Length: 593
Image (cartoon, rainbow, N blue to C red):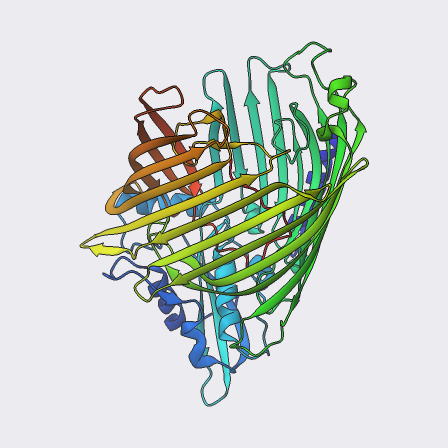
C-alpha cells in the first residue's frame, strides 16, 4: 500500500506538471546580433586564454538601466562549446535533439529573479546567470543586454544551452548485488526529475529492491524545490543501524541571492527496519520511527546599496526523531541511538560572497563559477534524548580569494563542542586549506594543479567515532581499528586537459600524491603514516548530464596490514561544489570519516 500510494502521488504531481501551461507563450524573436554574441561567449575553442571574469563585470556598463523586455532563447545540441564538430558528433547531436525536449521558456522564467520594469543590478544579474548554470539540466547560460536607442531602457536575452537530461548509472557489487539507476532530470523540459533505482541482491529476500523519487525545481516559480521519495535501499536519511525502507517529502528554498530575504526548507520521512537478510529474531532490531527536520532563515540587508554585498543571515532549525516502535532487545533499547531525540539549533552568518567565471577546474571548457569572499557562522543549540540534554556551540569560518590570473584558494576553520555535566564533550577542530593554480595554456592543452591540506583533532570523545583513513583521503585504503584522535592529510594533484576527443567524450590525464598521518595518544605506536600515489583519466561529455567521470589507479606502499597493493577506483559527477548557495542551513559540525 505504501508503494501504491507513492506511485499514485507521483502520477498526479507529474500530471499537474504536464498540465501547466500546455502551450508556452510565444517566444519573442531576438536579434541575430544577440544570438551570435551569446554563442561567442559560450564557445571557447578559438581562444588561447582561459576565461577569468567577475560574474557581474559585463553588466556594469548598464547599471541602473530599466529592463524593458526579457526574451528567452535556447541553443540545441547542434551547437558545440568547442566550435566545429566532427560529422559523427554532429549526427549524434541531431539524434539527441530529436529525443530531447529543450527546457521550456516557462521553466526558465520560473528560475529568473530579475524582472521587467526594474533597474539593472549588475551583481544580481550575475547571481541569476550563475543560478541557471547550477541547474543540473543546464550546461551554460548567458544574459545578453541590448540597449534601446535613445532611451535609458534595455532588453535582455536569456540564452541557455541544455545537457541531454536522461542518464543512468551502475553501482554496488556488479557480480552479486548490482544496483542500477535511471533518471530524467528535465522531464518534458519542465525542470522535473523522475528517478528509479533497482537493486538485485542474491542474498536479499526479496532479491529485488527499488527506490523512486520525483523532484520539481522552483515549484510554481517559488524557488522552492519539491521532492517526494520512496526507497527500499537504505539510502534515506536515517537514525537506525539496520537496513531500512522509507518514504517522505522534502522542501528546499536556497538563498539564491544576497538581495533575497527568506530561505528555508525541511523534510519529513517515515522509516522502518526490514529483515531483508533473514537474520534471527533475537539479533534483528525491529523498529520504526519518523523524522521531522525544518529550518527557516532571514537575510538582513537585502535592500542595501548595490555595491555593498556584506550581509547577516539568522536561521533557526528544529528537528525530531520519534520512535513509534523501538527494538525489544534490552541491550539495544537502552542505547541512545534508539531513544527519541529533539533538537534546536540557531546560527548567525556574517558573509560577503562574489563569484568569478573560469574553466578547467573539473569541467572541460564549460563555464565554472568559483566563489570568493568570507563567511563567519557562530551557532548554539540543544539536543535532548529522553532525560539527557546536551548544549552545543560551534564556529564555522570560511575565506576564499581569487586572483586575476585565475588561481584561487579556500580556507575553512571549524570548531564545536557539546557540554555535559559542565564539561566539554565530543569537541573537535577541523580545518582545511586548498589552493588551485591558474589553468596554464600549453598549446591546445590546459594544466591546472591543486594543493590541499587538512587537520582534524578530537577532544573528550564520547559518542563521536574515531578518525579513520578512508578512500576520500587515499583511494582504496580504509583504516578503522586504530583509535585515532588526530589526523593530518596532504595532497598535491595535477590535471592535464587534452584536445583528445572520442565521439564527444573529452579526456584529461591526472596524477596525485596523498599522505595521511593519524595519531592516537593512548595507542602503540602513537602514530602511523599512509601514502598513496595515483594516476588515471578524467572523461566528460559536456552534452550529457553525467558529471566528470574519473578512473584512477593508486599504489599504496603500506596498507592497514603493512602490505603494498594497487587500488582501482571509479568516481562520477565530480564538480566544484561550493558554487551553488550563499549560506547553508544551520548544522552541527561533522568531520569527514
